Length: 118
Image 1 (spheres, one colour):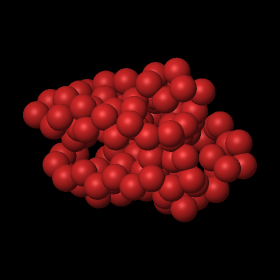
Image 2 (cartoon, rainbow, N blue to C red):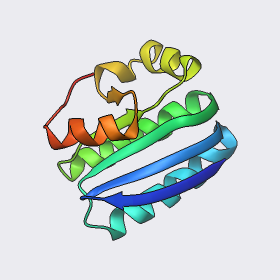
Image 3 (cartoon, rainbow, N blue to C red):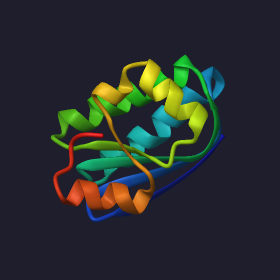
Image 4 (tube, one colour):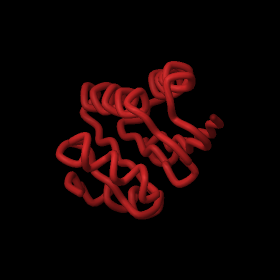
């Protein structure tokens, strides 16, 4: 799994590429949290556009980032999810607590407008 991060207007954007599974979730958690904690970012966008597979470990990693961002008073938005990831997002209950957007640009706009829903 690849990971590319960028900071834009107090928002950490983490682009995930590949399979978000048991073998990758902990490594990604550490990398994302390290970058977020070292920054002055309040919000986080997980760009899921290139995620080809996700299992329960990926769901757990996302929930953990949600809690981490919430403790700082920020918002977490998932962007660009494919059909498989969207189904897991809905079935797992993530849709009830974490916002989603069609793209990173939409997520940035939603965060700047105070968007908190789906």
